[in-house]
Each structure stands twice: as structure tokens, then as C-alpha cells.
Image (tube, rainbow over all chains, first blue to last red; front, side):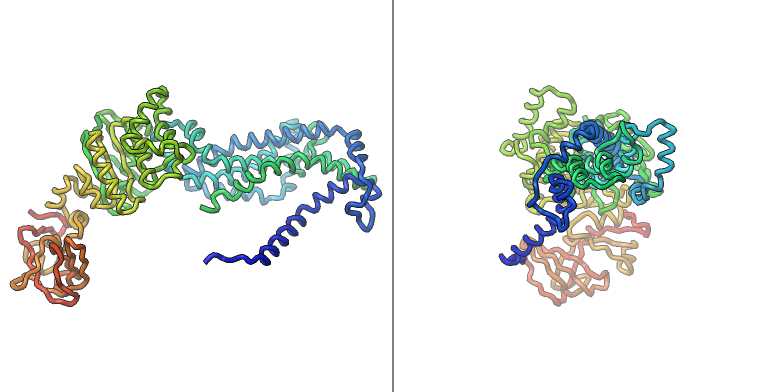
Length: 276
Length: 334
């Protein structure tokens, strides 16, 4: 029997869902609101929600004081390239693990995931030394490689689970039909896994965009992305909440917009294969 | 042309040998069926021929040339899979055209062949639909269409009908048989259903644990099974296999008698027993007879609707000229 939902129950569910949604969204909303306040209003107690004097002063100051465009460009380059590079490695890797598994495939997958459990700071020292040695400190190339590597286990895992959903017989049929390995990947596997691949790309881009530990520790000026841009406004000589909020808003805006437009794709990809 | 020869072919997965050394010749134009219980290696054997699995040792020759190391596409074979394995993102037309596109055929020729295949298989009305919008039988036809456009030297079918319901299966069985007559191409067909094997095959290959138990025409297998396994596997209902004292009387370890070769008689029967379950099919009735002292159950096939009920004591008269005798090694005697 299908479960019946009474109107009251529905109202309750809707309210709870909205409440949880707002709770999660609140920090972002608060940051955005604060960015339009004066420094005084920003630290007012009790906090002022909307009845404050709206100002663009913070944005003007932030844009004057730092080169937002350069940080943005660095973020795009680092997140974009590490995603593309990651996919180029992860698609063939996931293909082989899903369709030509060996005895150790499961172990390799677990081992890859286990690297994500290691606290990043544990390897900061060696990586830092390697970066000095190779002259990669404060370079975009270095960050692209590091971010690609730290996200690679997740991309491989995600693609592996999507590929697993694709029946091997279809790929065998393509092989019988004369497709080369490249054609098999291009005309059969990729079109069938598009939702999965797209959401993996998106998630990886978002993760790389938001990554702060390595981007802050391995950059100074030249390669600094938006995370460094935000950090530069939490200075020891005093907290400028409104300016910090303005910087944060500008840093998260691009990814927020990207996420908004692709949310359908993201949800579809993340639940791909959950329901048959 | 479509002759396939397997010479001393073996297959091992790790340390497990699933196909011990095996020789088999499939002649041009023949409809050969591999039949056996699940796990007997029949699908593996088909996949070895297709090239989807590498053989461990031995040789495979197709039309007289060594195909052992050829990739699947270069063997000139087409395969129809159990799950149909259609490309879900392509229309029926694109599915059927796919192997031709891979062969870089020109568009005019592709269209001609696809349309021809679609009309042979009654797919013209669905040609622009996606596989998801088709019924099981239609999908199976698309899979066959994709196979025939390539004009392969042989078709390989891997249990193609097992996902269809019973009525459709009988229909498709006829269609595939007719297709074979029309195309006159070698077909290798894997099934676990001995009825499919008997009705479709020119030649049946009975497999058990990777070993060929017998090769022959359906009637050869029915009339002279080489051993007790084939005797029990071919024929429906199964042959009655009797061991012990009754078999010794006939100088055999095991004797076999098919249900249709036992008559129910009023008096003077060789064996007596009580009626257990009776299956009334209208045209025939199958009786499962207990307490005969021969085997737990003796199955008897009576023509038409015979009125016997549960618990009746009856007499049975096996036709001695239809008796099969097997030795201690399970092999046929005489």
C-alpha cells in the first residue's frame, strides 16, 4: 500500500525541509548581508538583519586594495586544469578497474581512499621541501598537480561506481561490432556515463576551487587563488568583518553561480544508479 | 563460408581449468547448439570463439585461417547477447548501423543495409525509437538486426531467448530458425534449455564441466545417448535411470528407459507401482510412479488424457527394444 500523505503532514515536512535548508544556507546569506554593511553595523550587538544602511563601500575598498582579477584567474586555472588533468587520468583508470578488474582492484580502490584519511598537514613538510627543490613554490603548475592528486581518489571512485552500472556486455557488443578501444570509450562508454562524468567534473572543480590548505601554504603572490584572497583580509591588526565578507562573497560567487545552474546535473549524477 | 574449428583449446581462470583440452568442428552453414547445465562452460566456449576471452592454449581456426590471436572484430563473427546489449543512447537505426559505421562503410550502403535488415525483422515502425521504448522481443530483433547487417561468416547466440516470456520464446525460436534457413549462415547457439536445442539444432554439443559429452544430431542424441549424463539431459521429461538389481538383469550398471517408452497395462506388466503426481497436459499425461522398488520415481508418459488418480496401483510395461544400457563407467553398452 502506498503511504498516504495528509496535507498537515505535507505542510510539516515542507516547513522542516525549508528550516534545514535555511540553516545550511544561513552562513552564506549572513556573509553576503554583512558584505553590504558598514564595519560598525557588521559587528553591532545584537546583530542587525536587514535594517542597516546598504553600502558598496567594502567592495570598492577590496577591489582597490587587491587585484581580484588575478586571484580569480588563478582559481579558474588551478581548479580547471586540475579537473581536466584528473579526468584524463581517472577515466581510463576507472574504466580498467570497472571492466578489467584484477585480483587487487578492490584493494587499490580502498588504498586510494585511505590516502584521503591522512591529515594533509602530515605531508605538508615533505611536499613543501619537494616544492622548494623543484622550484614549484608559488607556481600554478605545482598547485594544479597537488590539487589533482588530492582529488584523484574521489574522481576515480566516483567514475568507477558510474562505470560499474554500465553492463559489460554493451562494451563487448561494441568490441564485436568492430569498435577500437578509443571508439568504445568515445561512442559507447562516455555517452552512457555522461551524467556521471559531468557531475564528477563539477564536484572536482568545486572541491579544487574551495581547497584552502594547500593553496594557502604553497602560494604567496603569483599563484595565489581566491582562498588566499579571502585569507588576506583576516589580518592580525584587526578584523574587518565587512571587508572580509565582501572578499568572501566575491570569492564564492562564481562557484555558487556554477553550482546553481548545474544543481540538477549534480543531484542526478550523485544519485545515478541508486534507483534502478 | 563459416567453418569454425577448435583444436586442443583450453581455458583456465587463474588455477581453475574450466575447459580441458577440447576439439570441435562446426561446419559451414550448420546450426550448432551448445547445451548443458549452468556453469558447464558453454558460454565460456562461445566467448572463446568470439574472442571476448583469450584461450589459454590451443588454436581456433575460422574458415581455415588461424584466428587465435585476432581481436573480436577481425574474426568476422557477430554475436547476440542474452541481455541484448543494445546501445541505450542510440536509436534502433543507429544501433543497427553501428558496426557498419565502425567499418567506415559509406552512408548510402549503410542506409540500404539497415533498411533491408529492418524490413526482414519487422522493425521499420520502430526504427527511430530508443531501445528503452521497445519490448523484449523487439529489442531482441534489434540485436539480431545489428548482427545480420555485417553479413558475418557466423552468428553467435548467447542464450538469446532466456529473458523473454514463454510464448514469445517459442515465436522467436521459430524466427531464428527461419532466419537460419534464409541466410544459410553458420550459427552457434548457447542454451541451457534442451527443448530449444532439440527443436533448433542441426548439431547439438552437450557439455558438462567444460567437457564435450556428446556431439550429434538431435535424434542421434535422443536415440543413442553416449552416457548417462546425456541420457538424463536430453529428452523431456527426463529418461528414467535405474540402477541396482533391475539393471543387473540386463547386464548393466544402469539402465535407462524414456517415459514415452513405458506403457501402462492392465495386467502382465513388468513393474508395479502407485501413482503419485499426475500432470495433465491434455495431449499427454505424465505420471510420477512411486513404490516400484526401482528408483524413487518412475516417470511415465501416456498419450491423451488417461484417468488414473493419486494412490492407484498400476502395472508398467517397458518396451525392451527401447531400453538403454550403461556400464559402470556410465558409458553406453551396445
